[in-house]
Each structure stands twice: as structure tokens, then as C-alpha cells.
Image (cartoon, rainbow, N blue to C red; front, side, top):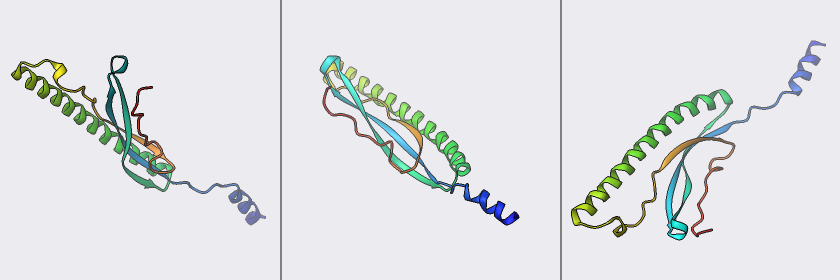
Length: 129
């Protein structure tokens, strides 16, 4: 009787399903001058890690989110420094901002929990819609 009850309980259980913790970056691009200019972005898978259970996945996700925040901060600083360098270059030559092409924008990073690595990857449209 006890064994039968035990196996009935176990029969209703579900197997643990692993997941992937994935680090992505959004990479913006300037699309073109239509309607005053438009931009798009590509979402690129940078790295991923398989976790065998939810507890492990949550712990890894928290650590990777901290890292993604650091990477985004660094990318924002790099983008600002690149813009400043372009402005200084233009000013030193007496040129206006129309001399250089539009900037793409800053890269940012994010974390996703996925069943399959790369589920959130995408390529932005390369023509004006």
C-alpha cells in the first residue's frame, strides 16, 4: 500500500527541464535618411550557459545580469567618447556635422532565459518600411 501510493505520487511528477542563460547584445545601425533618419538594430547572441534546474538558472542569471549591466555601461562610455572624438575632429578642421555619416548608437547588453540558445537573436530590417 505504501509503495503503491509512493509510485502514484511519483507518476504525477514532471522531469526537471534545463534552460539556457544567454547573454545578448543589441547592436544599432543607421538605416538611412528617410523621414528624417531611421535606425534599426540586430540582436546578437554573445554567449550562453546550460543550467540543469531553475535554482541554478536563477543564480547564474543574476550574476550575468550584473555583468551585462557593466558591459552596457562600458559601451555607453565608449560610444560617448567616440562621439566626442568625432566632434573634436570636425571642430579642428572647421567642418560641420554633415561631413560625417550618422552614428549608429550605443550597444547594450541583456540576459535571457531560453529553452534553446539564440531564441532572441534577430537581424533588423535593412530597408525603410
